[in-house]
Image (tube, rainbow, N blue to C red; front, side):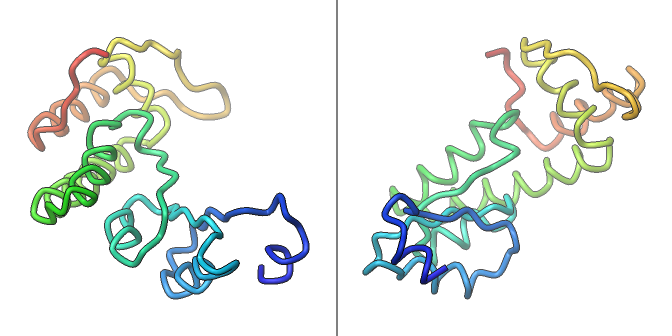
Length: 149
């Protein structure tokens, strides 16, 4: 990475999903700190920000943008209590989505929010309407904002 950052002026950053915060912090210092670093795993957004990484690239921000943006906003406002609460909420919501078949559940949540993006395509299996309703009920119990956008 050091060589790429040095030899290619258009190589200005890196998104890493390994979860290795120590490596990400080392990469963040390339080019005198001008090398942009984005954390990939959603469960590490707050930890990455606290360690000086620039941003996150979040899959969950597609369907839970309020939570992900809230983590960033609270962190930058210095409100760690809110940032920690939102990070925990994101982890719990992500676990619900994951246990419901991730992509099919994401599409169900987006439809609930007024963004019907269609179902999954074969060979993926579509979750039943009952499973999607159960997923949405679990998210509501976690106080996840599912208002229409």
